Amino acid sequence: MKGVVVLNKKSKGILEHIFFYSNEGKPFLIFSICLSVIGMICNVVPYLSVYVISKVFLTSKGEKKETIILWIAIAGIAILLNLIFTFFGSLGCHKMAFKTLYLYRMKLMEHLGRLSIGFFSKNTSGSIQKIMDENIEKLEGIIAHMMPDLIGSFAVLLLLFIGIGYLNIIMAITVLFSVILAFTFQFMIFGSKSAKERYASYMKASANITSSFSEYIKGMAEVKLFGKTGGMLRSLENYLDESLCWEITNYKNASFLMSLYKSMILSLLTFVVPVGGLLIWNHPAVSTVLAVIMTLIIAPALYEPLLTCVDYATQINLAKAGLSQIESIINETPLAIQDSSEEIKGSDVVFDNVSFSYESEVGPLRKLALNKVSLVCKEKEMTALVGESGSGKSTIGQLILRFWDVEEGSIKIGGKDIRAISTKDLMEKIAFVFQDTHIFSDTVRNNISMNRDVSEEEIIKAAKKARCHEFISNLPNGYDTVIGSGNIKLSGGEAQRISIARTFLKDSKIVILDEALAYTDAENENLIQEAIKNLIEDKTVIVIAHRLKSIMEADKIIVLKEGQIIEEGTHEKLLEKEGEYKSLWDLQFEAESWEIERKAGEQK
Image (cartoon, rainbow, N blue to C red; front, side):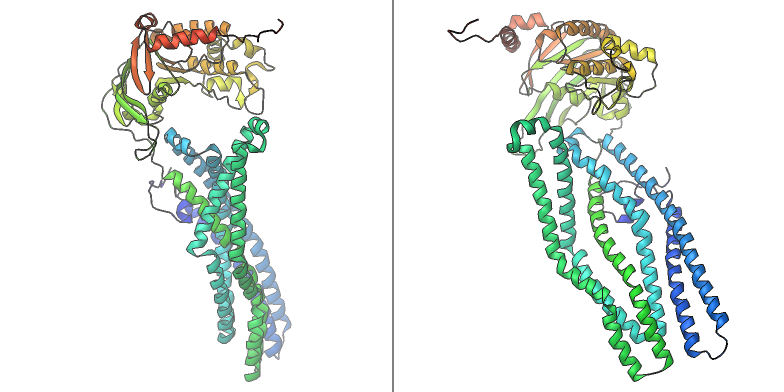
């Protein structure tokens, strides 16, 4: 792409936002805007025709017919040219607007893909969705409407003022004074620092509403269960109240000044008539009378471009506030790729003295999720990570994917630091089955293949290995059945097996299973265990598990507690140690044998 602009932290104007990613199409947009402006300027010609015709009637003593017909024809041609230029100008501006929206969304999506997961933990999906949708959509209004209309309106205003000045300088000064006074009120409404802060707070409140409403819909079952006392509903109500307060406050702050502004603009004749009357009284010449009459005709023509400026002033402030939110995402620094000449040799995963925390260093409740952890997950072996909730198991898996960067130490794959491996290469080397599987609203085939170019035979083979081919075949349209949100729902175990099929199909050298067997029944668990055994023949497999029975055959089991490794070994050796692993094993055995007892005296 030509003219790509380098990311920077400096706040940008609207035009800089439009051409932030690429200057391609800028000459075409300028040309289209010029066409629209020329079309609007053509609207001034009829006023010139009225002036010439009026002057002919008032001053000419000879033949008037030819001149009148000529200027009527000129006015008609000007109206026709206005339609032509405005049409093609608007067409060009809209074409550029839609192209810019597409480019912006694609580039922003790419940028989001390079950010750490930490960014998404701080920003809800609803707020990001609003920025991607509504805020970027405002660029369409700026490019297709605001820019040509504002420039055209200023051009028309300038020409009309020049025309009034040509007729009579005093009348021009009168109109200019009233307009300047009106715009002073307008600036007080929209141009002040407090106004910009108000619009920024409005955009924030709007994003909060979108985010909270999205969470409200997702959690509808809980909302119904707990009623209005649910924290999710209270949060939404608070954001709605915040938005309402903004609307009321903004109206209070702007209503009086807006009334003054519109009164001034819509009452230009209030200034023009007395001044015009005095001019005619003092200089009752034909030229003076003609100047006053034309000013009375032209003054109302100033209303539309002036009010256009006011309407767009509000929209521009909202657009700026929205674009600043886009800019905040753009300025988020992606994960840096370090320079390294090392080659990846093998698929061993090595943690060397790794420390990491989800909280910032200055956070008062800061706690290390991992504290100086060192471990080796060897190629062609299964390494299991076990421990209590919050011990750091899932954190290890996500750090291997570089969802976050470690604070101390290093993580290496095949002897190379993952911070020196590109995101694309890193993702190709790792397949990850998440505990909470996400099923896309798409066909089963595309959910397994993830829209990669693979054959039908490969997809079916992966599905059979993951033991999901049978239930897929029983769906209404088999592999062409659309599943996911708003479509056919899968059970937790079925969704988990679809995710495992993705892993088989991806055929990465490193496989991470985060509670992959959490939703499988006893029958399918045994089948999947057999498939995993075949999978690890030439791969590094890391299993994060709570159910200890599912990792009894692991080559190595690592026990974590409070972010530290406290035990390491095979299932048999760890049981012999009578340590933390033995305690976890006994607790699970006891839990699985637990049953509800009847109270004394109850009949069986």
